Length: 475
Image (cartoon, rainbow, N blue to C red; front, side, top):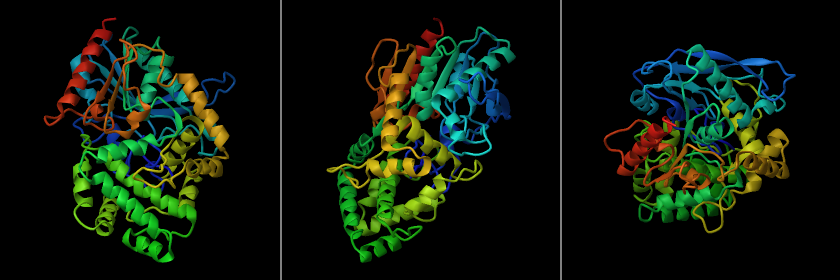
């Protein structure tokens, strides 16, 4: 089932957007905020339900926050942080995020806006499939455009240049915002943005393996564990051992439960890699700590120890292993349920992006984590079959241009440890689309606050952004 991410506040183990999304179980709120010195009051903006149907006059309220603490006044820049696949926090325009540092440098007004159908920005009474037709990246961009126009009007600053920021899914949105609204968005920073939609995404786990291999023997022990537990899953006795050692939430009673466990097995390790050493408050786990534990003794002891500790830290309490429970959670249309973001994001993977993180023969994770497993949930939950998913992904790439984005004044940043860089732009296509692959860093590392122990590569990337932005704001 689905998970990460994009996403904020610790969500329940089976419906937290951890699997196909871009953010993680251990407090995904950290991507859009954290402990800060400054919090802002919530504000609400009336948006159209459907920006592309003039006959539809229905409206709803979008949540956003503004930080004008460092703004120089009319004519100075406006920075907008685009929400992704989860709720924003009222400190997301200040403090914990590096936007505040940039706001000080450029005397900018900072806005943080929530994405429709996430958090409290729910346009409809429920999340039925019929209502989710109003959930798309294009509708979200139109929301952000309407909000920017309103902010410029209410602050009486028609000549302020607007710069969009985003990380992960919202990193792709940031690039697309500049692409689709060049008259409104002057420049953009796209951090860890998977601009290439892709149905089958085995490269995700391939990068995970390479990143683990930076610690000698770590990728090998994960491969050995995958093979060991895959063998145990072939017998009732082996399943019983796994259920006991990993404290599974439910018995492994079907073939799909077995795949769900194997996917969970891969995903939990992947989450540690994806956020390795990001300045996001997650101090317990990183690649060296993970590998140190996994290599410290017999794998049938070290792996259950890690997973059980991780579950406790994430608030899960047990290991997700029930396919049917996952599907039932995805089918919950209550927008206040713990899995609401999971349902919304899975819908977007089925209708726009794919991003299905499959295993492959020869990899360190199970090849039984197949495309059919993920797309089967699109069919079961939303009635969207494989051919429709592929057509939707193809349309997304045609609409935005994938890696051949026809725009200017966008800086693309990625970390080479982050598995999502495989769908990003990592080689510079033109002089006005600078690109930085930041060695040794993970997901959205450049969006977190700076610190003295930041790698030189990360420090250089941030200075490059400030240099480009200084130049672009004069154009």
